[in-house]
Amino acid sequence: MNPAVLIASVYVFALAAFLGYQVISRVPPLLHTPLMSATNAISGISLIGSLVLAGATHSRFAHILGFIAVTAATINVVGGFGITDRMLKMFNKRKDEVKTAPAAGASK
Amino acid sequence: MSLTSYFMEATYLVASILFVLALKGMSHPETARRGMFLAEGGMFAAIVGTLIGAHIITWGWILVGLTIGSIIGIWMALFVPMTSMPQRTALSHAFGALAAALVGVGEFIIRGGEMTVVTRGALGFEVMLGALTTTGSLIAAGKLHGTIPGKPIQFRGQNAINLVIFLIMTGSFIYFWSHPSVIAAFYTMLGVAFVFGVMLVIPIGSADMPVVMSLLNSYAGLAAAATGFVLGNNVLIIAGTLDGFSGFILSVLMCKAMNRSITNVLFGGFGAVIAEASTDAGGVMREISLDDAAMQLAFANSVIFVPGYGLATAQAQHAVRELAELLESRGVTVRYAIHPVAGRMPGHMNVLLAEANVPYSALYEMEQINPEFPSTDVAVVIGANDVVNPDARDNPKSLIAGMPILEVDRAKSVIVLKRGQGRGFSGLENPLFFKPNTNMLYGDAKSTLSHLAQAVQHV
Image (cartoon, rainbow over all chains, first blue to last red):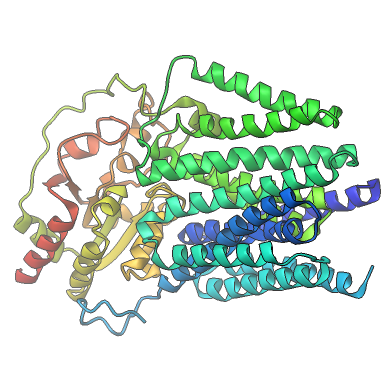
């Protein structure tokens, strides 16, 4: 990594940290669990590094490491996004006008 | 640069922007789901961009890995119950961190000799953080799931041993940094980091898990960001940093909610040392009959439910919602007060109640609801103890002094649902239970709540 690239990377890191702080401190405690699983899914972006390792190298050992990494990162991405969506679907507004029939489990 | 490489970089830029927009959407439940679709689109674009632009030569391993990972991921997403959300998330942290660590090892094998000092430093961080997060998260998942005892596992000289392990780890990191040709230093670092992850989490009790979860979340993100530095890839840096900071902010919030420092959580071993009980609160606990409790609730103007983790272990979320709807149909105002550490991970209780169809507008944070207690007729505490202990506010000598609490004791009357007369996880006496306006209702939370609902119907 040459110095110019390093400096650019540090800029990216610092700005992302600042932006992350601004955006994430606005997330209400109500959504902290979905937030954690969402950021976890997003950080599964190391999948793209794993793809390169598993497919664009010439060493058999690297392929195997890459294969395990691709599998693990995919679990992280697919499972993380899937479950975040399942959670967010559950957050419903108060069905104000429909106060009756509390026994029915139907939502929305 | 070839055209496909430009295309790949463009997808990375799009993905970065979409990730930020997705997290912005998380600021409100109305926009959160749409935000996640953006993030999913960004991830998809980045994957397609990589497959097109990264000069892939062998496809077999990639396709098999993507398939297996997707199957396991979909299975986890569809079938894991909401009560198990903390261990699922911990497991997911382990997978993400493992991927980062393995990418680091692969980079070391392929171009270990020709790396610059900076890249080597980033690689060291990536592998170290990745490895310790992997094993640490696995232990956390085991504890949360009950496979490993949730109690803190402690022994004499633990902190000294951990310090030695930490020094060996950082020592081999520095040695690898300055002597890239010594391959053994790299693998020593990797192995010791795996061990350190285990040692870091075993002394921590289940009740402190919200902090640990957030910290591991942060480490997993930082490992991905370090991967970005190694590969010179900006989308990895951005996504990893967002995750790292999110985890960091959550750990700080959780620590504040327990009035403890991160070092205290990690090295204090709370819940293991407390033998001396707090001041004897004295007095008697008054029991109340189901019918009297139902009467109080039915004729109240406003009721606040205060759920603790005991509610989740009793699986009583639906029972409390049914009782609440019954009361609402009688014109009672019903709200829920959620303490930040009411579950096993940040925000866990909100998810559990949302799953039971409690509307999110009825869920109130601690700061919002505390001023409302004095004008509330009945506060119903369900399976919560330390988060409603007035000693934390009034008794400076208490072990939990300074911890922010839900000020339930200021309500006009309090009904406490409790399994038995025992103490909470911290072993502290809770003066709330002895107050003249407090009544105890013993039994399993789920059956008590449904009996209460029946009794309210007959009032």
